[in-house]
Each structure stands twice: as structure tokens, then as C-alpha cells.
Length: 329
Image (tube, rainbow, N blue to C red; front, side, top):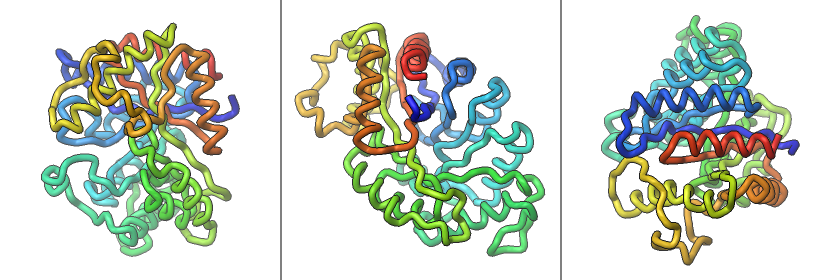
């Protein structure tokens, strides 16, 4: 397939495991993804979530880049309202200086957590204009002089690194911002499937190279897809119940670590798959998943896919990554 395939890792913590073990497993997966030929590996920032250990993205990125050679590694993303933009520039510029031209910086306006935790983390505004100004300043700090556009502050740690910036979004609002700024757009369709077609259309319509923030010549969309590949469709459907339980817990306000798979028929709400937050998925045998992903690419016209795979057993996730690579590349 001509569309690149990437991975979004949230460093999930299975029931009975620790954050230390989840991070170690994530690094093993990073090495495997590098060997298999995946294009990029991103870590998603989340807070106050007992089943995820992906809070400190820059540290995870540094470790993953240290144990890999070819794959691009980045944030998918940094939730900018939780951070001072200068600190983000210094961190990601330092990463680029250590690991070279393999570092991506995806930026989102959501806090990636609940309101109480967001208030504890809050460092910058999520308003569109302020978000755009922060991106402009970040590009200045990543530029040759290391100087921001709205302040005389200079960042020697990031100067000249040119770290590429992406805008993350799940709605037409994020799509519009990405387009107007002339930046690549990463669409969170793996958990927000309702506005996929509208968001892509808005992004392409709004896309402009006239803003000083523009860093690409034409629109570029990467979309998230939930993926589970196993030897048979039935095995994959059963393993996929792990993430279905996770989202069911979210709806019910229940906090648990990642649960083992169950009989798919035992889960409620499966009668209306078109209403599911997880309906953008490719689940089954290698050929089934390849066909499903191909259909999604053909329908949406996206330029890249970023896959999200949860599994209770780390070996199941590793197997899924391997089977998908073998059938896709």
C-alpha cells in the first residue's frame, strides 16, 4: 500500500501490571515497530488515568528514540494548554539535538484529562488565536535564530532544529486551525468519528500557504484507526473487547486498568455499532484488516494512517503489529 502506516501509543497498563512494566513493554514495541518499517511512533499525553502511563511524552519519546534507528518518534500530542510553549520548544529542541531529524511535535488544544486536573496543569490558553500565536512562537524558537516572534526570549536548546509541527483535532474547529496555519493535520478519528468527512473537507478548504506558520505546500491528513490483527477474525474480535471494555468504563465513570478480553456477545451496546466511538476500526485477520484499512483510505483520501492497538497481553499487541506490517508493507 502506498499510504504510510504509523503507531499511536498510550502506554496502557494491564490489570495486575505497573507503569514501569507498561513503559518497558512500550519500548519493546518501539523496537519492533522500527524493525517492521512503520513510519512514525507517537505518544499521546494523558493525565489522571489509571490505565495509561503516557503522561510525560517528551521522556517517552527520548527513550523510544534511544532504542530505535529509523522510525520517526513524536508527540501525538502535547496538549499545549498544559504547558508553557517555551518549555515545549526547549524540550523538543533538545530531543532533536540528541536524536536528529526524527522528532515530531503534534499539538492539541484539549487538556487530555478531566477539568480538575486540567486546572492543576494549566499553563497556556486553548483559545484558537492564542493557540495559533503559540505555534508561531514555537516555530521561531525552532528556527535558525532561536527567537520567538512575540518576545525577545531566545532558546539556544531549540535553535536551528526545525522540529515539524502538526495540529491535532477531532472536529472541524481543529481542522480549520490546521488548514489556516498551513500545517499537517492529525485527525483523532479513532475516538471521534462523527466529523471525519466534514473535518477533512474543512481542512482542505481552509488550507493556505500564505501564513508565516505554513510548513507544507499542500494539505496532509493523518487519521487514527483502531486496529487489532490476529490469525483469525474471531480471535481479533475477542481481543478487541479489551478496548471496548475500556470505553465502556469511560461511559460508566469506572476507573480500571486494561482488562482481559471477554466474549464479544457479553458486552452491551454492540447492537448499534454505528453509534460507537470506536467504529473507525480494522479488526480481524491480516487480509480482513488490510481490506478495511484500504476501504477507509479510499473513502477519506487520507495521506497516512496512525493505528491504535490496545491489548491485555503485550504479546497479542506485538503479534498484531507484526501481522499488520507483513500484510501492508
